Image (tube, rainbow, N blue to C red; front, top):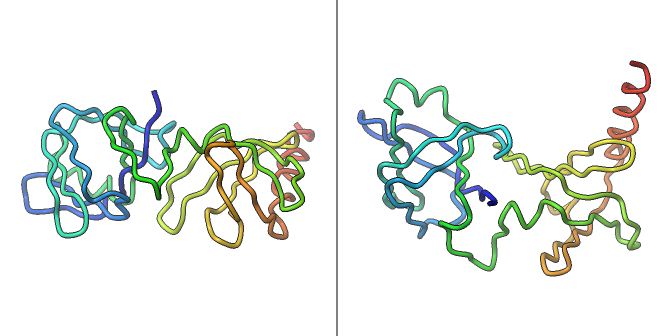
Length: 178
């Protein structure tokens, strides 16, 4: 079972505990009452909630979660919402998080660099975590770094900006010191 990012909590709507999502990749998405969702910065580090209401709102979604009151929403702002992929229809221009995890990462020369092990949903841009022999390297999902993504071949081509490889080397060095 894989979870897909469907948006980030941006603000409260009204006084009944309804939440407005931002960065919602598919505003035509409809989540039925009873659907389980995860809230957090990554699906691996998230808490489970149940949807009791979902409706379109302008260019995004308005949702209501079981047990979440208006007073709780402030602490949830800027967390991502992840939904089991079985409840989501696929759109060609978006990738499921589970499709990204496990992809081989190569550079422009075709040299294997590592494998994507996690996806972080962040306010500025997402981050794909690449596991290498030397440690983890966070790859910002920006055009300057992610050159192409081929889901069918499970391959991501990247440009390693100066300093990115050093992050893994630094992590390996710190582990050796302990």
